[in-house]
Length: 319
Image (cartoon, rainbow, N blue to C red; front, side):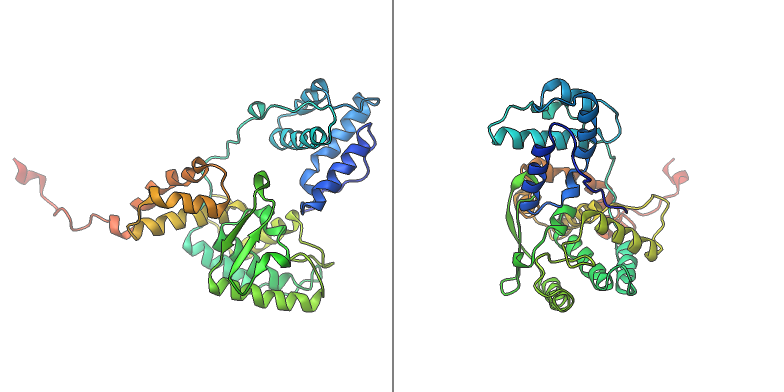
């Protein structure tokens, strides 16, 4: 998937936009996280060439240009406004309540069979001219996402310094809502990451990002998407429901964790705060969202089978 690049801001907000992008980059964000601001700059250069203050008229008009991408567009202009306000400048903050809600339907949960096929495909990834390390990255990065329920952006922003191999933990820095957390990782998965780190360091000495691209810089979100699509297509997983997204690893981690607790007879209400903290949710309701995915899945579990519980009876014998 082509990377969205910033090709030079031209509007009256050019200096402020460049400062904002540099600020976000210093926090570990990849610059293409805010590619919609290219469109905002073009809009201002055309409609408001002399404007240098972010007013309500400018923001609302730009956000209403099209329904396509409106959620990301509104969210990114809010982030820019928050930055300007923090710098003591005047800016209109688009109301969060005015941003349309996402309506993506039920998330795609990757089945055990699909997982097996998918990781078989990543393990057989061949060497690519595009990246000397892609064949080694694919088997590790997606196992880490599934095994820890990481968000895609958290994954590409991981640094080498975030991994504590001695204690088996990973530090997630400045994630959603600017929150940090430290998560425990299984020994097998951490050993896999340790071996990958050693190998990657041989290709790119003194790299900072844990998962590097072909130049040794941190992998971009769009490169991760490309690698996922490539791996999924190689897996021959096709159940007629379409291809899952990167977030499907996070959805699958959450539901499988809850399913395991159900099988173990744990008190789900008591365990939710632990899952919420591990996944970096601000509110428990964000974690409870996954519980609504459980009923249909629980119905398919072995212990829910009713075979043999009630004997078959000939209805004619009832009368």
